[in-house]
Image 1: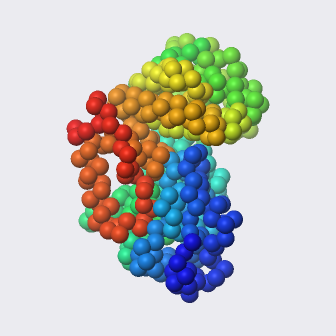
Image 2 (image 1 turned 120 degrees about the vertical axis):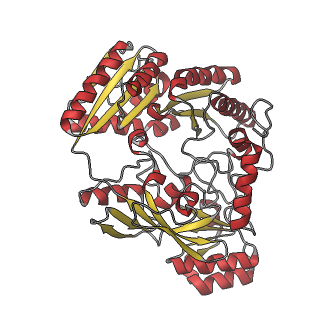
Image 3 (image 1 turned 90 degrees about the horizontal axis):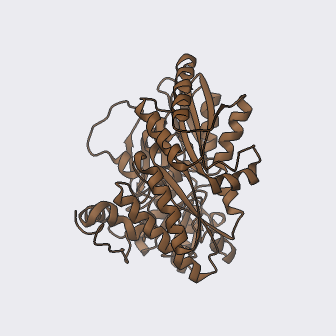
Length: 472
């Protein structure tokens, strides 16, 4: 519980209605979308303005109270769990779209706006906001920025950082800075916009963002390719990219994931296939038609036994939504679902999928794999039961092997979910010890009291592997 003087100071700033420290509220904000990580905060605060955030931060710094900024709790790396107690800062009162600027093609938003609301508002204005994490219906832009979220359209359009032009952020001393702006070019000093994007709330608290919008593509077409094995699907991915075609979407599902998705969505997926590719292209109609024909040819050359175009916009939308529902579909199989992400070079996708299958068998756990084939981002998903400690130990060992293999193949421990607390023991595998030291120096400079989402990124029990860790 908060010290009485801290609670009184927060009430003075926010009002009693916007501070909650009941057991119910503390439990509700003790966890996010990551199984196995839970810790109750001392209180939950709901600021209504940037000034409110500043005053809360000043109070927390004075009394050494940790602050965990949180969106909708869809985080999958234990990035918003209040491991060190303190206050969870929720932005349900800061959820406005402040401006759509047609002249500069920008949208200015507060952190509590959902991704879907941004996408829909952009469409209503005749514009397009491309980032589309699978949780977009409920995830907030503040969370997207903190994690630098990706999505199905990441191959062609990039990820959240590619659409954040400027930020307003409150730093650990309560000061407020503005970075970037409605500019196509800006090299004045360090790029704090990029530094804060993906910093997981460990350096500052985003209170406003200027987002880039683009003209919408006039045409979009969808195609489904089915394969007897994952190797053929992976060869098609390499073939498509080698043909100098960058699809809007290039997703894959393995056979067990297809079974789960079909049972859930019932869109007619042939569950006997070894793998499928969901391919979308958008742009001018002539170019889209040409690319779809070329990609169909590549798929057929690589032993796809069925390549079909969606017959209607409704069918295309159903297929895309089915892919987005993969986590939901798999979650119905066991009490606990652990969705991970590891990224490898595109040419290593099939090798990595087979390694995941062998690892699951070796550790006697159930893992299905799907993901963004076009950018090599795989989502091995384990169905388990967090109450079974022996099984959870085997799950952790399996994922440790998977992360190690991803790095060995030239990949990374996370492509879009973030490091948070769950993957912090493995950060040095990717960055090397010198890289971690450099990151800690930035953290120390901007948050010397370590009140901004402490315990994330930097683990006290870093895993050591002779072949991966150490200074490189």
